Every structure is written in structure tokens, then in C-alpha cells.
Image (cartoon, rainbow, N blue to C red; front, side, top):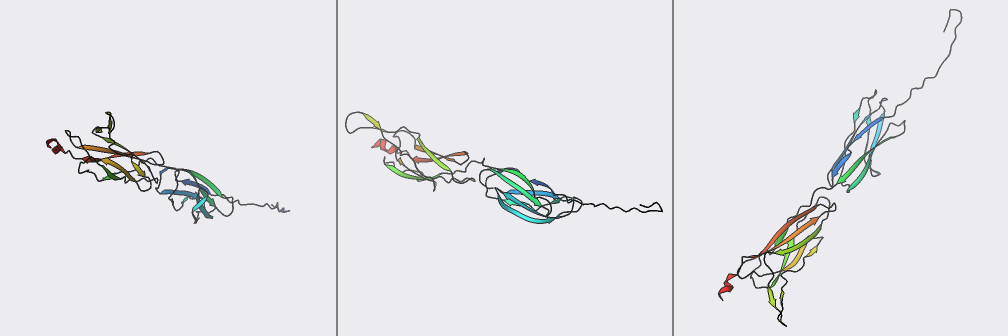
Amino acid sequence: ATDSKDTTVDSTLLIVGNSAPTVTPSGAGSYQVNTAIHLSGIVADFDGDNLQYAWTVDSATKCSGNISAFAGGAPVALTDCQIAGLDLGAHSAILSVNDGVNATVNTPVSIQVVDTDAPTLAPVAKPSILWPANGKLVDVVIRANARDNGGPVQLAATVTSNERARRERCERGHDRREQKDWTLPVIDQKTGKISLKLRAESAKHGPERVYTVTVSATDRSGNVSTACVQIKVPANHRRDHR
């Protein structure tokens, strides 16, 4: 500053600060188990710095990279991060961005992996027709053909018949008792094989005997599917004319 006679000089120090990045992640929500999860994000940096970013899920780094921001703060999109194979339940995903100057900006999102789909089930019996109708117990194998997107299922099976069990006289005494027309199903949970014995017999004056095996499959989330398979014993009315 001068007044034409004297001049005074002074100085000041100006410091231009560096702004931290602005981060907005997306991808939070609920996902069906064994489906792909897409995480994405938008970043901005007023200084136009080269940014380093990373996605971590449950503390494990899934995606990372570098991107140059626009000076002035215009937003720029990050490359999508695709994740698969997360277990059922809640998971924490964090998008971390660093401009090399300021502290890393960490922004979390919440992910919930659910299973609301019931298992598929298509049981097939072999044999499906018991013949001859000689009253003997016959080995029957049922393949459950159960599938579920959440992993293994728990199988169960019950048996019913459209005919009452035959009553026969005991060898000792005069009491009558019912025959057991089937055995309890034995289930191999690993292979989905259901084994049991069914009696090859039908009522003398009735229609064909029909055994109905009801198979159920329950997944880890409690979703249940039920399907029935029938094994039949043809009527043998020729016995009436002997």
C-alpha cells in the first residue's frame, strides 16, 4: 500500500484444503439365497483426485480398483461388484474410498440373504404296481427327487391305504389280529432314497388297493413341500370262483 510518499508491505499465508470424497453406495436389501448380489456406488471429489475404492463383505475384500474423479465435484459411477455364495442371514458390506490425502471414507450397507422358496419334490416309486397279489410283502424304493436352492433338505414319509388291513386268526387262541400291510419307511437323507415293504394284496370284493406314500421335504429355513406317490395292487376277483 502506498500513499505516494511511503509504501507498506505485508503478507499472509493462504492454505487451500483438500476435500474428502463423497460416497453413496447402493445394493442394500434382501436377496434370495444363491442369487447374485450387485453392489454399486457413486463417488465425487471436488479436487479431482485419483481415488482408490474397495468393497468388503464380512471383512473380506470382494472388489477393488482406482478411478479418477472430476475436478469440481461431478459424480462418477464405480464399476459394479458382483457377489455370490453368501450364507443365509445378515451381512455387512462396506464401500471404502480414499483420495490419498484425507482419511478413508467408509460407508456401510446391509444385506440380508433369505430363503422363501420351498424345495422342489417329485417322488417316483419302483415298483409302482405290485403283482402278483399273493399277500407277500414286497420291497419298494421311492426316489424323492428333492431339490432346494438353500442346500440339503430333511425328508419324511408316511403311508396310508384305501383298504383296511386284513384280519387273520392267530395260530393260538381265537382272537383275530390285523396284519401289518407295510413297514415304516427308512429314509437315506443323503441320497433321497426311501425304502419300505408293502403287502401285495387287495380286497376280494373291492377295487384295486392303493397305497399312498406322502413325502415331505423341509429346507433349512422351514419351507416345506409335500407330494404323494401311489403304489397299486390290481384287484384279483378270480379268487371268488375257486
